[in-house]
Amino acid sequence: MSQETRDQETRNQKTWDQQTWRKLVKRLISTQMKKRDVKYEILSQRLSKLGIKQSASNLSTKVSTGVLGADLLLAILFALDFKQLTDSDIEDVLQDLGVNIEQLKESQQ
Image 1 (cartoon, rainbow, N blue to C red):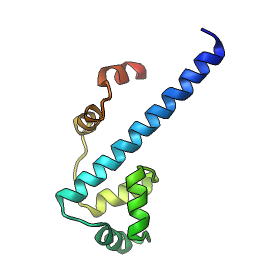
Image 2: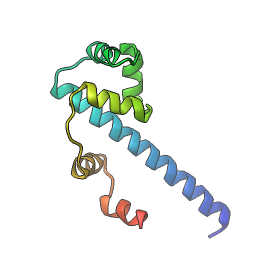
Image 3: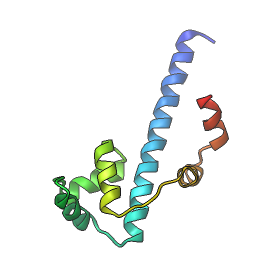
Image 4: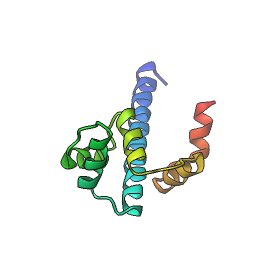
């Protein structure tokens, strides 16, 4: 296998991984919002009380794409009164997304 082919496979894997992690973020936030019956407008208001200005439409866009900073992710989870995120919670969502957890773990070693 040529170096160019290996480089392309690496780029493809990174893109796939990035998309998967973004779907994970979307699913985690959306699930917590539904559990608590929190709409984006309410979330926006809660974040505002924490000093974070985000419109409801901006939050909707960020959550639906799964693209947001770590600071906003943590603030959202705090605003939703999310208490605990375990590795099994993450694995469950990843499996729902079709990720081979064992293969993912092996790639980390």
